[in-house]
Amino acid sequence: MRPLPTHDVMEGAEPAKISVLRLGHRRERDKRITSHLGLTARAFGADRIVLSGEEDPSALETWESVTRRFGGHFQSSYEPKPMSWLRSKSKSGDATIVHLTMYGEPWRDCIPKVPREKEVIVVVGGTKVPAETFEIADFNVSVGNQPHSEVAALAVFLDAWVGPLDETSRFRGSEIEVLPSPKGKVVINHEEE
Image (cartoon, rainbow, N blue to C red; front, side, top):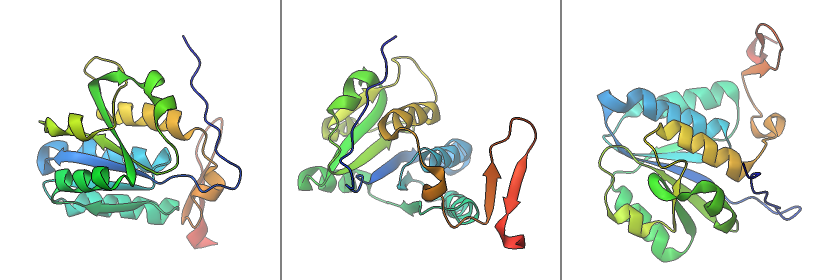
């Protein structure tokens, strides 16, 4: 197995923003998967998640609640016209669009090609991804060419793209802090201090 590609970020340079677009959310059918996509995006270093499909305030509330309790500056919003939004981002050249799909090119080959100077929008599909998504995307990226979880694909991509997180600085301002422990649970509640 080949080692993962490494990326050097210029010292002192502000890292590019990472957004995750969840296409085609269905409130009842997808609520757990969509919720987990947002939690994974936050935990693995994305700056925001954009929900599309059926409007679902409960998903946005979950992500905002977790961010408030566990810290950081993760944002979430709803986009009623995701394809128009992607088209405008593509035409402006302000963002690189990465579409996670089992039909794409291998992620280990694609990641070194994705520019790091501008925002990256990671598109994670739901049911019936519009064919236009494959055309708009700068990179159609596969984490394996087999059916699998979109949450797993997002985690693998972000881990390889972002690399290790400095959780101390990234998740500042938390009400709750979980400390690493070889056994048991160690939790600090900053609200009780």
